Image 1 (cartoon, rainbow, N blue to C red):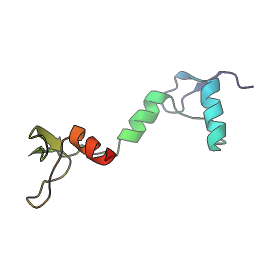
Image 2: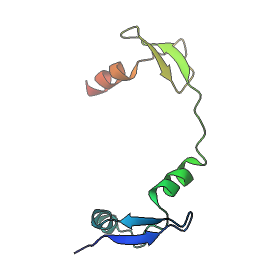
Image 3: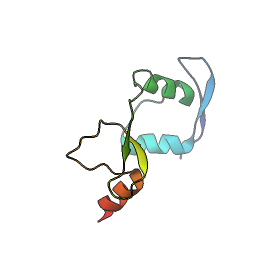
Image 4: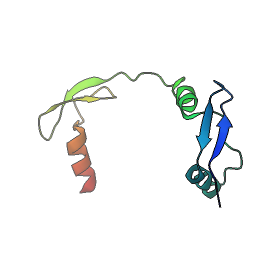
Length: 91
């Protein structure tokens, strides 16, 4: 039903392929317009307003491992490394 299409990026002018799989995905999501930018330009545009997060060092309350978190740890709340946090979420 769908066939790969070669499109031109409106940002950089490069050719890119809009694959049959991508077209099927767009149709399933209800998107009616084809992409106008190549993947590299879409990523660049997406990250333009994204600021670098300040990371804080903390010690995991469960395993004692040092970890980095995107919030300032407080004394009254435990902080967990990503592995321990995932295990706690599963429980």
